[in-house]
Image 1 (tube, rainbow, N blue to C red):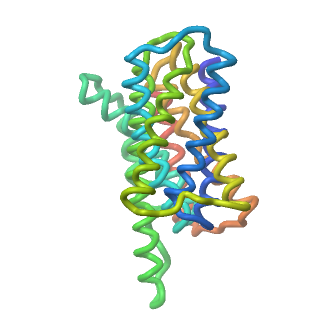
Image 2: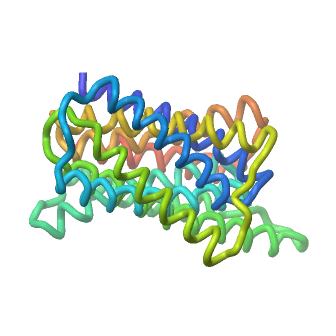
Length: 283
């Protein structure tokens, strides 16, 4: 059951990233994240009202807020990468980084990597190299730089999502969904401060981008709720990595709805990125 919930979390998150990426193509990424987080907070409060029967603790506030800050940073970076790059390449690269981080954290805290996990790391590194390759031609240096920039943002976004998984898993092991509320409170506050005080950007959004951003927030919170329920009774090393399979739905939606095309060598990189996540989960 926990594995099913983790996979469901991944598919819902991938759909949310696809929708958020579409919104970010028409509006600033940070503004999209503001609206997404607002919708996510409203969804989290509704879920708490329906499913939680107890109050919150300081441990939930601390770890939930820390997870939210990491997740919001990852979301901003991911939407910028999706807006300026090919979704079918950016999403798997982000997932490979998000999947590798729990493994690295485990090694630093005393875990030993098995042969399968080492193979997963190799596949992830090879995937990043292959998806960064572009065709040859005189007019393509700018496109290559743009792609490399998008992939760099994708790697950083993956690190943010990986940290989100790790920190959210450290919340107390009960049925409370309050950590999701504190995660959205922290992330929404941080993003609003960034938008209004630092970048002095209006948070206003209207029309189709606003609807897409709100839908993205609802889907993202639904994914987080599924993940939190799954990880409470499961292993972070398995649940967190299965939840990183979200590029499958992002890539499928991009191919079907946007008719995105990628080169054969880049397609191999996508396969390796998803394969690395599977190997980590198998480990």
